[in-house]
Length: 202
Image (cartoon, rainbow, N blue to C red):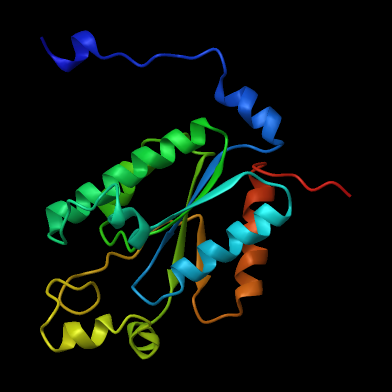
């Protein structure tokens, strides 16, 4: 018996549309991508704080937190990194069904992996946010000392050093990782407003 014969998606009585109506906004994924140290996690946390303060229902999927539980069995080979992103995409899809605005902070260096995640969603649900920060600036920040360890050969296949980062070709938002956080937040809020994910009442 194949999976297709005995596993089917069950449509529950409480729909995504009903949850979105109750939440007062649509569900969406803000997929932050960029090099380690680019500012992804900082921006993801900042936008979650701002949206929550505005009364939105949110959740932040952080790379390190995910690897403490859901993906603790995965290493950092190319195959494991691909599986890590696949799992995150599926979790984000469930959260969209709950009507949440989900921010994710993952390097997700490969275009093909990001495209597979994008394909899980409707166009108005998924927003790729490229945090563009030069590698030398990321290396100067180096909040976890990872670049230094990579330079010393202690970490192999480190993105930006000995493993490539494929720059997004058509992100919904191209953010300057060196500009003030408030400027980036304004751009993200404007993106959500333009796409009718949220609306502001005056």
